[in-house]
Amino acid sequence: MELLIFPDSPAAGELAADRGAARVLTHASGRPWVVGAWTDEELTLITAGARRLAVFGRTRIDTERTTRVLGRARSPHDLDAVARELPGGVHLTASFDGRVRSQGTVSTSRQIFFAEVGGVTVAADNPGSLAVLAKAPLDEETLALKLMVPAPPWPLSLRTPWRGVDQLPVGHWLDLAPDGRGHAVRWWRPPAADQPLSAVAGRLREALRTAVAVRVQNRPAVGADLSGGLDSTSLCFLAEAAGANLITHHWQARDPANDDTAWAERAAAQLPGARHRTVAPKDAPTWYEGQSDPAERWQDVEGPLSWDRNRLHMEHQARADAADGATLHLVGVGGDELFTTLPTYLWSLVRSNPLKGLAAVHQRRAANRWGLAATVRGLADRSPFARSLTTTADVLLDPPLDQADPGLGWGGGWRRMPGWTAPDAVATVRRMLREAGAANPQPLAPDHVRHQMLEYSVFGASAIRQMRLALGGSGVEWDAPFLDDAVLEAALSVRIEDRAGRGLYKPVLKAAMSGVVPEPILRRRTKGEYSAEAYDGLRRNREALLEMCEDLHLARLGLVETPPLRAALVDPGAKLGQLIPLETTLAGETWLRSPSASTAASPIGDAR
Image 1 (cartoon, rainbow, N blue to C red):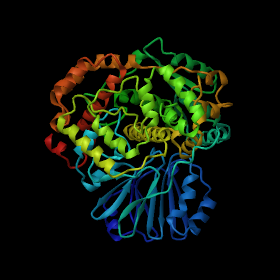
Image 2 (spheres, rainbow, N blue to C red):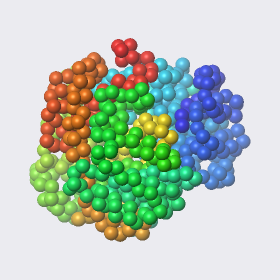
Image 3 (cartoon, rainbow, N blue to C red):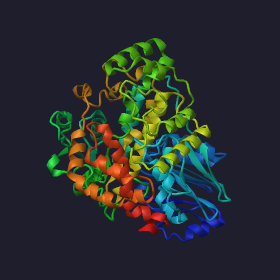
Image 4 (cartoon, one colour):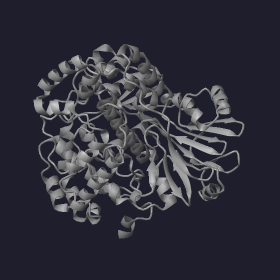
């Protein structure tokens, strides 16, 4: 699917007329409104007089009621209720009395990007289309920012790699006026965290059931991860319950101590209606394979791919799905982000329930060997979110946080630049962080843990968007039901004190999946670890990666220094976390070598 959305203005009509798109929706004026490519199954179009509302994506919608709401609405703001009721992860756009409202999902798993072209604001579902339309140059500052480990903080994480191409903030829709101007309008805020888990579990269960059902309905077959973890396992049971012709996919771990395969086999035995595909390590691409030689088919139109180290794994999986007739692949992204007990849970808990919070702090501190001074300092921190950005600027080249520091601040306190980042690039990122802090941005939620939950969900959603586009040619769509709006809202509304418990693993998700996933499987308390895959992949592909260092595009741009990067590839260190800086850098380098980086007029394209 590809969408370009235009305001109801003469100038925009002329601009849209040159697109030569396969499909076109028009405003009541007759001017082009949405142009692009989509299937009949991906569009629900509702008309009320001169007003029109288009929903792109598989969903469940009451067309009669929505028609009444559209007809009676006094302004595009009155469509909030419609947006809140749409499951499935969709794009919504309305042509409303000369104005246009366009939005994706709260998590940004479906997102709206926009740019000014010839004095007219144009929206799209991906930034690459706008980069071509606007002839936008690469934004080298953003490329420097994307080297940050593990990722840039909110709101800098929303920057695209093209100058003048932006994306909507979380919880906003884009308002396009008849004169072609556009601005973001906030419509969603996180709910209060005041509901007991007993009251939320049923609502969360139904939200997940619906999220999966609308995706799998009328599909010839559906692929799904079955890693053995709770997130993917839950989706598999929900998909089978929804009547999907299910094909599960499991990658066997290299480390025999990893018990994911044993748990995946237990789950598979309880899914007799599904077909189960298991791939041994010797039959699968390794991590980091292919990064040094991006294929011409690699169209990463959103920028460096978050999961670039595993791209060939994903392509292997997509081909297997397609061969079995599947048109959709479900992944558990969003499960960890919404249901894992993050350390910042303690900061929020101490404020919502001090007695329980102090007991939990004592237990977690003892279990993790956190230092008393670092823990107390983190719990007492009342600094505003904006200050966390300037603090991050101050520590960009510091060593990682000591294990004795739990990292209870807004950003966890662990963002760093790789040691091989060029000094000018570090200075650029430092300036961007300080400028962002000076603008006094508000956090995604008023407390530390729910801000992080949302921030991590947005990061996971961007990875899903990237992978969906990168694998679009396979005919298999990748999707993450945990990132649906209703799922997100339910997860965020649980009381802080109910989000964790001593000896409990993901209690919120387990409560929701009671009666869906067999109880013995819900009792799992371990989690697989994949350092063996990381180090084996690096060892097998080290020669090709070192050869790539002979002519780094990142070095040409003055963003990295080659000798320390080569040294890290030769000796990355014994801890898995030491590989993460390599991953962000390799992803950036691979993207600069791909066709997507030269899509628009850019210095990189000229240099080559």
